[in-house]
View 1 (cartoon, rainbow, N blue to C red):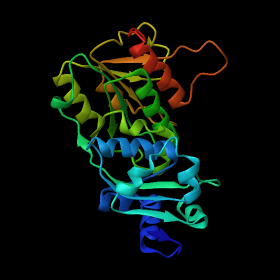
View 2: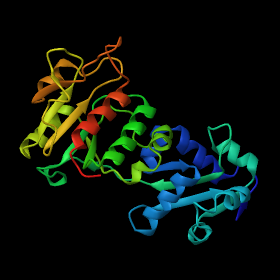
View 3: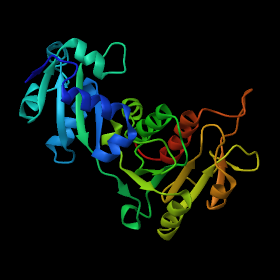
View 4: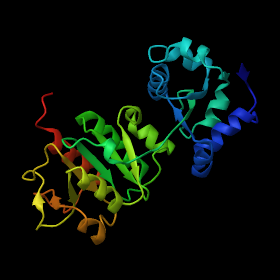
Length: 270
């Protein structure tokens, strides 16, 4: 089916899902844009691990990005729509959209002891608000091979389109669990024998290069501006920090997190 009207209900639904966190939660759906992200979504769909509800593509995109997207995937989707180029512009928040979009369903798995391995390595996000930072950290977690990421409820939404775009498909490859508070997450980790490390800016904290960040650990990253509140630091077993040798005393949280994630996993064979 071809859609040429900007007022088509399917297009309005996509735009509303892209712009409204409340609507995404009500529907249990989120949106993806771009050839690679949509390819990853269809791979998960084929594996039975994701529900693809609708997909949209311009004819130009289907031809241009055929190396990423198997046209048969679209044709086998019950709600596949080709759209005009101006419709793609309405659906996207990018100046130059690739012209491929997906609506998919999602679930949110609560953190529990059954989710964890005593020898696993985990990243915990505590009150991170910038979607780009969250997406970048998911991508880095995917690259180094941590066992899972845990997001506390005060973080920005996992299915925010900017998080999804920044993660570059890692949202489908990294297991993400959810906890209401860091204190709740800490109880679960400690019941499994996993040590919890608070990442802080403090000269008295243990250097990240000397901390025991091997198997059976979880590192917490705090808010971009204020870091971790004292009450959250207090539920952790140890404080770690990145020693600075230049003229700065702090790093962007995604940069700091990437360094810590590398330290967690650098002993693994690559």
